[in-house]
Image (cartoon, rainbow, N blue to C red; front, side, top):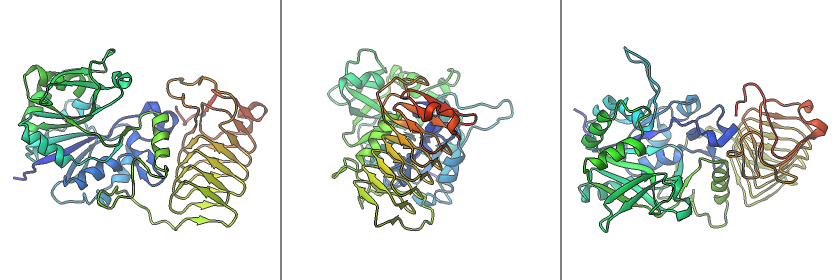
Amino acid sequence: MIKKEMIAMLLAGGQGSRLGVLTSKVAKPAVAFGGKYRIIDFPLSNCINAGIDTVGVLTQYQPLRLNTHIGIGIPWDLDRNIGGVTILPPYEKSTNSEWYTGTANAIYQNIDYIDSFNPDYVLILSGDHIYKMDYEVMLEYHKSNNADLTIAAMPVPIEEASRFGVVITDETNRITEFEEKPAHPRSNLASMGIYIFTWSVLRDALKANKDQPSCDFGKHVIPYCHERGNRIFAYEYNGYWKDVGTLGSYWEANMELIDIIPVFNLYEEFWKIYTKSDALPPQYVSAESKIERSILGEGCEIYGEVFNSVIGANVVIEEGAVVRDSIIMQGTVVGKGSQLYKTIIAENCRIGEGVVTGVGEYAESKLDPKVYAFDLVTIGENSVIPDHVTIGKNVAISGETESADYPGGNLASGEYIVKAGGEK
């Protein structure tokens, strides 16, 4: 029988609704990041760098691009006969067809997959965080404490702690209490959603909680283990870790990549980030163009000016266009003379000539003030913006728009245009 010491289960089914129009047609882990990567590349690269060669990827919402990107795992050296990477969508059983209703329910539905490797330990990961972490070191820590469950935790500012599951520990780092998103946190050690379970303990907890509606690690499995007196420890992590779940944090994380000395370094030899790379021509930068502090993807053509921006593969920025503090994903064309400020443009968009974005006074979003709250212009994939329109701040656009959609050639701050097929 196959025997693996530890396998990883990567939860990648999330819709990522706080990324607004960026995730209307694609799962959050498949969203582009850093001009070349997709968000899921980071946990997958961590796995192979840490020597974990068996990864189950649990998909659900809009999985097509994610599945195509991962394929059989070649970029991460995960194309193995035994182990490797396996896509695990929800599937029909003889009695009924069930969606994954919660993070732990997704793992419960794949107990047979895990059992087939007979692992001692199971690593649970989320598919939407940007970080580098050696899970092997965390496993050694788990073993040295004879732990049943080890939760990776990091110190956060106390005023932000209520957004997370918070752990309270004793002097040996054993967790004495666990609070899921407490209104008045008593600790600033936040769970990162990265867990190592001893498999027998997790299996028992999943089976005991299988009838919980939308069974979840934070709400059900961890409290269950705690009540049973299981040995639960916090593994403190102090490196760079970013949950890119909001447009603001997604934009910031991209912008941090272009700092003179980036906090998060994509260029380290010893801990590479791997991705599926298409065979693309090199960049072309014209003599008239001007570029400062930016990341340029392969195959892009720059004829205008780019400042402090992240430009994806095969992007064309035409003559006279100026792009500042923006993220432009692959396959997008920015027309002549356009001026873009603090704008996130998803894949394969067409921005007309003489378009101006991100200008004017701040106004609250009429579409969703919780999602669109960062002064950003967000344009969903395959969108078209007509020539010579002006677009304010906190704006969302999705779909093929035309001049008639912009009264007087303007879309004021806080407004939105979401065409059929371009759901928010």
